[in-house]
Length: 380
Image (cartoon, rainbow, N blue to C red):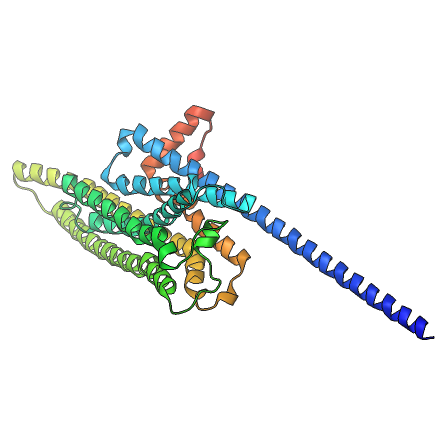
């Protein structure tokens, strides 16, 4: 009897261990399958963003240098932005994807540091272009006569040089020196070994740097652009009021002169010359006002896309040092891709809504592929 009971216990223990091992194996297989699906989705999205960002920004740069009509002061910041976004689409996104595909960093550590500096600095430069373009539009509307010509061109170039310098100065030192400051180096991965939230203490250098860099690099930009937007809005609103008042005065004067009796031919001739100028002046004012309104809409679009694409990533960068357990690889990777997508959206937002760019693009596409009415795709 004891032998039977012992055999039964042995069989029960063996079957239980087999069931446990089978359950563990199935769980690991399902986890591995889920990780593969996650990797496939991330790879597909990053390749898509890279293709759109590269082709779109490369097309904008080609149009700019192939058409002298596009080589204006207004478009200099747009081309600088296109260069930053083109670099992001060509290099960092693809190296990040390669690391995800093979599961490790295949190059030397020096190339990893160069990749990280290029990635973070160009993304930062792309963000700061929002301020430069908004400020440039503001002064071109507020002081159209003073803010033009060689003076404006020099100011824009100096601002862009300062922008690129600040972007590299913000990220290059910490990326090249973090292994000495934090006592951490690249092991098998590049991106994840550089920015890891495991064992990160709340009150240390890395946390302070992340909060400061994200604050200066993103959260300060939002109120600045909002302020510029509102200043342009009220400037255009005031200009509309002045134009309406002026048009009303002109119409009153015109009607009074039309009704008045004319005694001398010279007076009649002068009146005709004066009244002929009314429609042309009114047309020029309306055209300038329409141009200013388009600039306002563009800045509004800039702000909305900027917030939507960058907010999830930067919010996690601020919160995760204080809550490492809140880290979710799916959410972080998606927010990372969403931030990269800003470089793919910018060509459509900045340049393709520009009438000159749109016209040149339409002619180019008609010439190459014979497409007709492609311009209707974009909102005038």
